[in-house]
Length: 557
Image 1 (cartoon, rainbow, N blue to C red):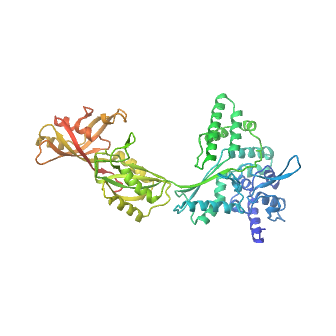
Image 2 (cartoon, rainbow, N blue to C red):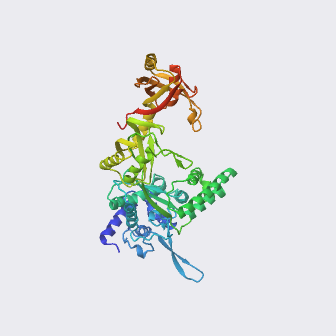
Image 3 (cartoon, rainbow, N blue to C red):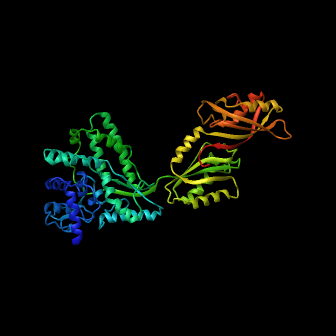
């Protein structure tokens, strides 16, 4: 039984809500066709505490409308379940009666905080619906052990709710369009079911989690489904849409959706609005009112089963970036497998990514770099910019954590890879990486052999070339996995460093446009790159070793 203070609070909230509502006979009509209190509030643009007030149920609203002066909130005496659903009495042939809970004919129990458990298939019967509902979500978050400093709520629900709401609106239009209040109160903007659910739960979640709701990367996702109602909706559309082509498309979508909903029942994977849902929503949006009447019952049938609910939480990807140096000629940039056999000792991707993943406690990671070098090419100098994308990170690493990750990678006994300037960054770094990659210049040092002795004239000839344009056809060595294209590239400058006691070996230092194939620029690739070092010197030239000595990008410096 509610206390006098609670009663007065409920009365005041309902008085404020009543200012936006139409005459009581229209509201009672909505209650009679199975629309819940919160759906009524949102249809008429009610704002404020009415949504999150646990004591306001369908029966309480009905009692207030029928006797506002003598109003008393005692839901247990007026046929309302603890979760806000109404009890309906049925009789069978033996004259026995049974109580069956009825749920909102629009939201299917979502705004009554009634749902079927995804695994046990039991209905939620919380004593204080909103409080218990949000507390259960908060406990799930804490159980998953996420480090959070804010959250946002995502909601996914079946398209049948859109159809239900339209059916109720058409019912109200047909019955009350001539009333003075109709255009003023019913045709203005209103809250969606999703927004009403967020309004109902956000403040309590903030209380239970001790954090504020904002556009944070941490998301709480509520995925509602109602396979039975959704199948009826899809069948109605498939059977009533005119045109053979439209029917075929919709029937295919029905089959896809059936598989999808069965999948929801078998597991708890989160699903966004899939292709079949999108097709249904488009069909509903483009459907004229007279066609809708042919397809659906107006007002919608009352429902006695609430939605299934799957609650999950996840974090949007976080990014840790820096520059890496690679000292081994037997370590690839990413994991390289051929016929299930690893090529090389290890990869930069694994050495860096696994160390970061273990600290962040994410589901998985992706490695992104500003270009790449071959497995037999070292990455020296200031290093190559890279990003590690961590999916669903349970923990946001601190500066201390980042420092410890760097130490662990850099102090590895094998010393294959080192990192510099490691830091936690926003997703804007991804844009900077892509923009910088197209504009960057790269410097190399190549050990070159030529078929004759190197002369002073050769050295002067090479060093005099500035911003040399070359044409490169896709190299033979990568032609099996790259499109056969012709690319124009620029060699910005070159210089030769002699090697003592050798006249045919030298170090070629050069700066090129990003995307230049250096090995092919040296030997010519059977004429597919022109000019080349070989053609410039007029002799055969071969590259023996190659190092990247600098990647010029204004990021992670």
